[in-house]
Each structure stands twice: as C-alpha cells, then as structure tokens.
Length: 117
Length: 133
Figure 1 (cartoon, one colour):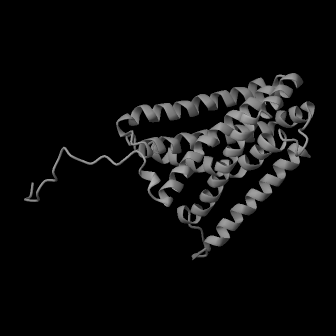
Figure 2 (tube, chains in turn cyan, red):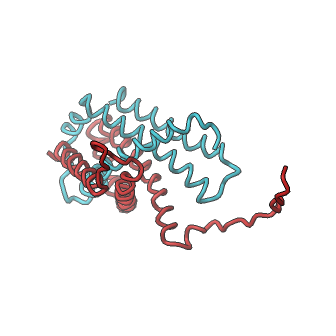
Figure 3 (cartoon, chains in turn red, brown):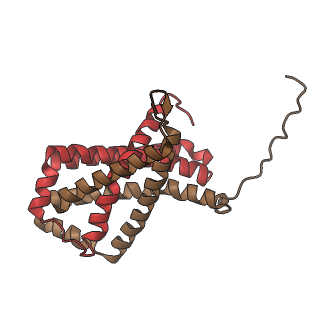
C-alpha cells in the first residue's frame, strides 16, 4: 500500500473505531433493530427520544461513534477487498472509494447531529 | 548481482477467489473482516433514525414502521450477529495488540479481556437505561 505516512493514523482510527463499535453498537442495534420493532420492549415516545438525542453529550458521543466506526469500516473493508477478492490492481480505486464513503458519511453525520437535529 | 539464480518470472499461479473457504480459520477471518460492512450499515441506520426523529413525530413513526419490515428485521438480526463476532474477536485480540504492564509485570490476558466485557456491560446498561429508561 502506498502513502506509508498516513498508515499509522489510519490504523489508529481503525482501532478507535473498533472499540467504539464494540462498546456502543450491540445494545443500540439490539434495541432499535430487534427489541422495538418486534415489540419486546415499547419504543420511546418521540418527545423523549428527541430530548435525549438533542442533548449536547448525545450529539458529541454519537458523532464520535459514527465517524470512528466509518473509518474502522473503511480501513477494514479496504483490506478485505484487497486480500479477499485479490483486487490488487485496483488498490487506488478501492482506497479512494472506501475512505470516500467514510468521509461522506462523516459529513452527513456531522450535519445531521450538529445542525439538522 | 550475485550468482543466485533469478526466480522464474512471468508465471505465478493465481489462488482461487474462494481461497478462504478451504479452512475454517480463513473463513472466520473473512467473516470477521466482513463485520465492518455491518458496522457501516448500523451507522446508516442510526443516521436514518436521527433524521426521522429530527423531522417530527410522524417521520419517527414511519421510521419505526419501516424498521418493523421483516426484511429490515432480518438484516438487523444478521448485522447483530456480525457485530457480536466483531466484539468477541476484537476483545480477544486486544491483549496481543496492546499488552498492558503494571510495575513491570504483564497483566494477564484474562484480566484485560474481562475488563473489556465489563466496560461493554456498563456502556450497554447505561445506553439501555437512557433509551428505555
């Protein structure tokens, strides 16, 4: 892989994102993906959830989770395509696409959590 | 150059695209790497939720309705399984990736991994308390 100087930072973000994903995603995904839709637990009302999400700490934590988790995805998925599918000829394109997605997603997350909400 | 014979060039057998199917540990490795796709899906799902909640009670209700679609529930169930795989493999690797020393002594792996699960339990309980409360 080219750009050796960038690699340590990519790896640091990958690790931080891995930790964030491991700590925050299981419960949130369980609640909003399974427990609420299947009626195991009743979903929070709109005013309650709006209150919770609008709190500055929630915004910051969720933004951190989103950005780091996306960078984690980009870094890991890049190597999966590179090694798993043996797309060595397309290294540049794959890297650009993966990190491009992560950057676009981060910008969307920042807009939604900081301005739109 | 020395007299070492050059490697024959121009021919290298391409491994099959399905090389990771041949051994269980390779398959697990690829599945672990693929968990990242579901982490990305979760971020998208979370941002859709934030967008819906910010848009008002009606849009929040329609988000809940689409989340109850069997296809979405199935996708989220698969995603949760992959996220659990990520959690287990990530925590198990930490003592190797980041050995911790206290007063020159290496902290046993079980202590590091155990405290990570403890952190997961605390964060999960806190999140559940905040959301369901």
